[in-house]
Amino acid sequence: MSRRGELDAIVVGGGAIGAALALGLARDGFDVALVEARAPKPWRADDDVDLRVVALAADARALFEDLGVWTAIAGGRIGPYRRMRVWDALAPGELAFDAAENGEAALGWIIENALIQHALWNALGAGTHARVLCPAEVAGVENDDDGIVAMLAEGTRLRARVLVAADGAGSPLRSALGIGCDDRDYAQRAVVANVATARAHEDTAWQRFLPGGPLAFLPLADGRSSIVWSLPNDEAARVLALDDAAFRAELGAAFDFRLGEITASTQRAAFPLRLRLAKRYVAGRAVLAGDAAHVVHPLAGQGMNLGFRDVACLRRVLRDARDRGADIGAAHVLRRYERERRSENALAARGLDAIGRLFAARDPVTPALRGFGLAAVNHLAPVKHLFASIAAGRS
Ligand SMILES: Cc1cc2nc3c(=O)[nH]c(=O)nc-3n(C[C@H](O)[C@H](O)[C@H](O)COP(=O)(O)OP(=O)(O)OC[C@H]3O[C@@H](n4cnc5c(N)ncnc54)[C@H](O)[C@@H]3O)c2cc1C
Image (tube, rainbow, N blue to C red):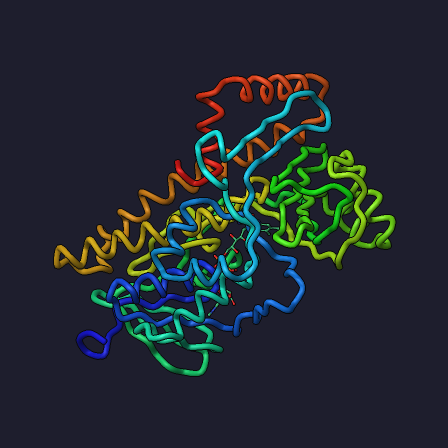
């Protein structure tokens, strides 16, 4: 710990983003405390594949390698996706991406959220200088001129030069810091399940746009697919209540039987979908990262990818400040992070929002336009490569 028992950084929230950040800052030589309210869900190789998975791109892998957790994650249970196919229920045309076109083995990987958190927490527990406080809840924060204090619910006070709120989409700290959001309820829920299909998934991430929302099939390592089916709230409630046979029949039809019949399915879960963008990322010596700063539609699997880019950026900015002998919690330092990340995150969120709206439009003209758009993009090599680069995290 630095002067007067003060930490360099407090990270609140030990989800994937907070845990990666705490580990990264500790590896960078900062004194860090990670405060998490709930112990992470255990991940065991013998358990069935968890319902919560994410599609992560190349730059997330680079971060994991840098943090020394990629071997543990890759040795766990991950499904590479080598191709992507995107098509529309109402119009012709298809977008096709292939990792081989860019000379790469995979566009990305489908990984269980619990495995990511498990690997990060194991690494945090193995000889880093991060202090992990769990279960412990931050009840409030106090900024002053040369430090910030996190007040834990049980009475402990932690003082640091900077505090990062990585406390998720509902971020109690974001509200406590007086940071407002642009917020829109999509009135949709994403229904998730793991399913077996008659035909092999071919290491391909498939997405079909339907009028009610997109339906994705993501390839799991065990040959099944993880589905993310975005539906209007009432439809989601109906689909959740179907018996297994009816669910499989409806899902197969909604997916145009692209992988044949759905032959088995697990239990289902659903997550409400919102667009939520924090109006600023900095309040005094506190900054937002991950879902606390931006919640996006899952249609292109970008939420956690964007959060990991927050992590990489914040580490770089704090390291640079330290190397210059500057105060790592100074306003001009934290604003540099805000400037870089807020614009990229907002652009991604608005782009996803626009795509979602375009494909949800029910008027007779729009389907023709978007069909033309998909076909055109697929035949314009430079534009397509740009799309593929963004999807693969090389933007
Ligand atoms: C259906 C669905 C599919 C998705 N698919 C993808 C995908 O394919 N690719 C992708 O990149 N992203 C995807 N996402 C988004 C991704 O899941 C999120 O962006 C990511 O999980 C956010 O991580 P986080 O660490 O910011 O937040 P969280 O995982 O929510 O972690 C926040 C943590 O903070 C803790 N906490 C909260 N308050 C306090 C407090 N006061 N004190 C202490 N601790 C506190 C919580 O207990 C929690 O552990 C998807 C999301 C959904 C809903």
